[in-house]
Image 1 (cartoon, rainbow, N blue to C red):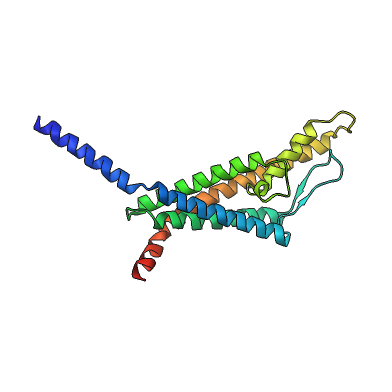
Image 2 (cartoon, rainbow, N blue to C red):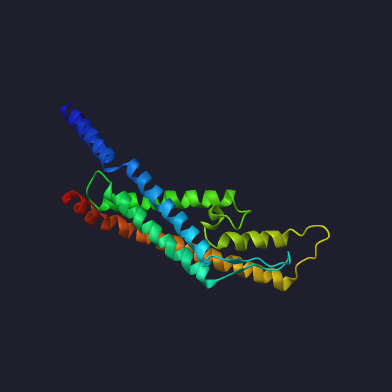
Length: 204
C-alpha cells in the first residue's frame, strides 16, 4: 500500500512538471511573431517587385515564377521561423534546451498550418498578401487547375502547355517543401539560441 501511494505521488509530480515545462502562451507569442514578420516581408517583397507573378494574357498559357520570388519566399520563411522560434524559446517557463527547441518547433508547425489555411481560402487572388504567404506554388498550382478545366468556347491547352504547367507546379511545390524544412531547422536553431535572449533581458 505504501508503494502504491509513493508511485501515485511520483506520477502526479511528473505530470505537474510536464505542465510546467510546456506553455501554450509561449507558442502563441512565437507564432504571432512569425506570422507578423512573414506578412511584413511578403508586403515588402510585393512592394519592391521581388514577388511578381507573370500572368499570361492567354488563359491556357502556363504561369512563370521568377527566381527572385522563390529566393525571397525561402529567405523570408527562414527568418520568420527563426525569430518566432527564438521568441517561443525565450518565453518557455522551463530553461532547458529540450523545452526551448520543442516550443520553437511547435511554433513553426502552428504558423505553417495557419499560413496554409489562409492561402487555401484566398487562393483566387494572386495579388493579395494572404495568397502569397505560402509561396509561388499557390499560383502555379492554381494555373494548372485552371488549364485542366477548359471552359466552353475557350481554346484547349496543348500537351506541351500542360506539361510545362505541371513542371512549374512540381518545381514550385518542391521549393516550398525545401522552404518548410529549412524553416523547421532554423526554428529549432532559434529555440536553442533563445537562451542568450533570455539571459540578455534578465541582466537588463
